[in-house]
Length: 294
Image (tube, rainbow, N blue to C red; front, side):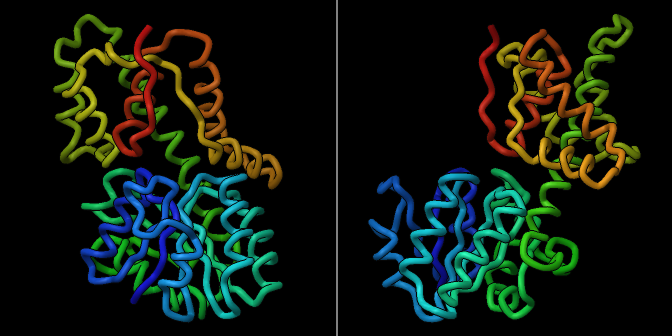
């Protein structure tokens, strides 16, 4: 299969490489000519066989809007656009309607795996029509981890469902990171704890709190035992806010996720060892920038 990929940043660059390792042909476009295979979207469209499949991996919001609009002007009926970024599910529905006027198909796909996806594979959550998801299945199979498809890929439902599932996934992620971080702060504050990194390391096998996030926490402490190089200012990328908004809209109590989001807001005002750990974890799994310690 030969498909196009727009956006070769931290995740898109690795996704192109993983797909190529799986035997797929990928033509990538990025505004940075040092990583792009073609110099324009026009060249990308011309390089692909019909029906064209183009995966969009750019920041959500205005940039995604711009790319989808341009593709709507340049693709042909029957072509397929996949939005693999972190767009809000309501934007998917708008983009799908916009492209449908031109006969162009649309799938949204939530992607989890961060900077580790090249080697480990990506968890994928797709939304759209069944035949459109099936057309892109060779790409999904190339990007996901080896093993049973159902363990790392799901066709969640209609347009927007993939990004809705990823939104909730990220909301859960907020709560998990906050719990680990608060535990870290409790342990760090107690004088009788003399081996803080070793405590977390000992939880990696056999305990009920073992997880990949815990593994990354241990890695962060190995690299910077006191997290002295990291400021406690923690960004929120949008999905946590959207999850809380959806919880309110649907009258679903989500106190852990909401508290984790508010803790990020608080991190921008006061010094907090727990929020240093949240910042360190975001850097570990997603390559998100940290602020240097003041």
